[in-house]
Each structure stands twice: as C-alpha cells, then as structure tokens.
Image 1: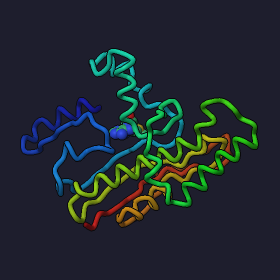
Image 2: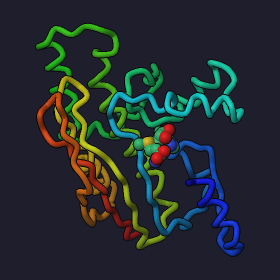
Image 3: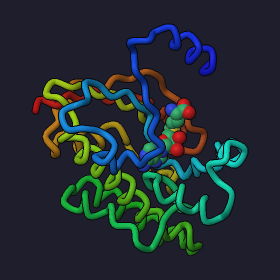
Image 4: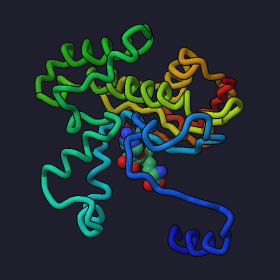
Length: 215
Ligand SMILES: C[S@@+](CC[C@H](N)C(=O)[O-])C[C@H]1O[C@@H](n2cnc3c(N)ncnc32)[C@H](O)[C@@H]1O
C-alpha cells in the first residue's frame, strides 16, 4: 500500500518530499526554523515494546544495519519506551523532574515492585523508563518549538498503557500536560478507539492528542 501511495505521488511534481533517518528529539540540524505547519505522527508509547525488533529484518536487508554496534546506535536514537533500550548515559528524565504527576506515577510503579517483591534487572528499571519516556517526549516537543510556524497544528496518536505491574499510564493526558507546560495549546484529546486489557480488566484508550503552537 505504501509503495502504491508513493507511485501515485510521483505525478505530483510540485509536491516535494524528503525522508530523514533521524532522532525526533534532535531535529534542528535537519529542518529550518519556522518551517513546519503540521505534524501527524504515531510516537512510541511506554509499552515495553522494542521497536527495533519489528523492523530488524528490513533494517538488515536494506543495509541500514550490519552489526550489533549499528543496532545499538539505532536503539540509542529511540525515545525510551522499554527496559531493553535504556542506557547508563540516558538523561531525558531531567526534562520532567518538576512534573509531580509523572514523579508520582514512577514512584507508584517502584512501590508496587517492592510490594510484589520483584527483583529482576528489567523490573527495577520500570520506574526509570517511564521517566525517560515522558522526558524524551518533552525534549522532542521542546526542540520542535523553534521549527514550528505560529499556528502550526500537531496530532499525536498515543495509547494508555498498563505494562508495568498493571499501573495505568494515561499517556495522552500526561503528554497533554507536558505539552501545555512547554507553551503548547491543547486543542483536544480525541478518543478514536478503546482496547480491552485482559490484565487490568479495563478499557485502554487510544487517543489523538491535538496541539497548537501559537508562537
Ligand atoms: C508506535 S510506532 C509507529 C510506527 C508507524 N506509525 C507505523 O505505522 O509503522 C513508533 C515509531 O517511532 C519510532 N521512534 C522511536 N523513537 C524515535 C525517535 N527518537 N525519533 C524518531 N522515531 C522514533 C519507532 O522506531 C517506531 O517505529
């Protein structure tokens, strides 16, 4: 379907397109200030999924990766969303250290771990990965501000998660707070579907967070 779409676009010679293999937290070197009118994206969620796995075969076949070192470099460009992709030098958590809701969420995950007596290396990182996730998204939204044109609109598809000891993470709501603190206007958090979680017996919301940058 994507190939068919691209072939159709070829006829539109006035519509330029460019693909950047880049880290969305670090885009100023690729794009000019005041150049973005709209963003539509589906970023990672804090769901313990290793996104390098879903495309590993393609990454090797298409020549983007040929060694473990290449894989590590790719994973380091990811917003942290799983404990297998956390590194010692990670510092994105600083971006959200003043947001009580995120600190309380991470603290409750760690408290639940202690209560359940879970001691594996991965489980010990759950609270950290939540802080790194929201910190990474904050860094991305902060970086974007100089690149957006006043009036630019942004749409982020995100889902609630309960991957860490079944503690509910309201991803869309928390990202809305992060964005508001960075000066964005939250236009809406639009529910587009729910998924039933057999683990928590609750409906997890998948939402589109709609933001506006007023300059
Ligand atoms: C929820 S998935 C969406 C995938 C895509 N919309 C699709 O349908 O295939 C999130 C994607 O964000 C990518 N990603 C993670 N960190 C990123 C970063 N720092 N910069 C750019 N993309 C990133 C992951 O590799 C993954 O493909």
